[in-house]
Image 1 (cartoon, rainbow, N blue to C red):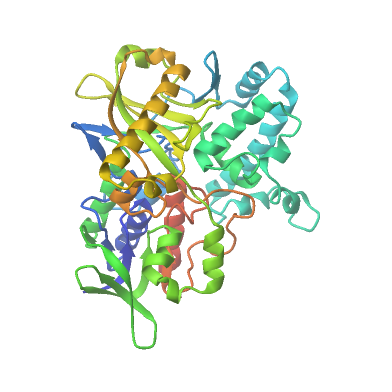
Image 2: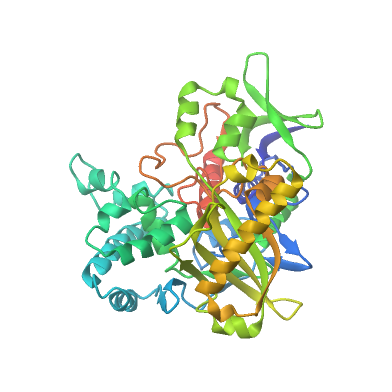
Length: 486
């Protein structure tokens, strides 16, 4: 078979760019190894209950924002998104909940109350964060930029040697919070670890500005789950006469005698040709390690890939009854404890997302914490070892969960768990439940976010997007679609 564009991977990035190309008349085919689309936002269902696959931080669903812009081109309706009324909350201690108010004055008042030991330093830190975010938002509204966060800085600070821009892009978040108390720094650190898998002493301030602003924006719940977004995009591709082929694992790029990429080889032995472009919706590591192949990857690229870090996650999918939900601090919140699960390599903070009431009369809840990846693949010699490891991780997180959230009481029931190995089995993502690339100092992407070492091979997804969020990936996919059809 031959197409204009072949997309490898049916995650949200690949589906978005394919849907836009198909709507613009490009003959496009999506190849997905699983039996459903969505990748990391694919439908998660246990015991007939749909669960949020991640943290539930869905932004940019408002009028004139990125999802409205994308679906304005597509022949299908967008999923129904409803704004969440409650503020996102960070719990620093059992008796201290800090609501991240959208209103600036109200939020600064909350900061002063929460951190009486350093009220001015806390406020000044967030004023700098807001300054960058506002420039980024205005840029998006006027559609004058490329979606890469670095361009937002140039609207505020001059980019000349010795300027604030040159300085700030080389400094960590910790250096900007040096006048604040350890408690405030832990407050920031917990958010960065949860949203960017990076600690305060490693995270680039530029990346932190987006993440710390995200949870103070309008957040939305998506009717029938975020997987509906992937399903609508796949439907759009088909309506526009594109192709979505499930259960179609891709092995590698196909090359002609001159060494030029002409398509992809499937596990079935079939070669699917691409006349104009091949788009990888795999991670940046798998794009080179699997599609391109290490022998065809330039040594300079291999060196850069080794520098990039990422991590996994451990999740609990649970039912929570009405009474317990009513006692919780918010529909979406983050708990920052000072403890980790010893031996399990689980992070000290975890997010909680409470979904709508399900058929059992309870609410589907997803609890997510960071996890090292290697232990899940290195220490199990048998299936029994793996199950024991998973049970130990569950017990450790379960104990922390109840100590930090006594409001739950007996009103929560575990339905299922997931870990980096689980995610790998489902998605084949190299690092398990990966969320982008660690936003550490020195890892900020510059230049062309979609290009690879192969001229007609492009990449889209959370490991190359300007921001490792669903909205950030969709925006990146729109930019790539524009590039291929300009």
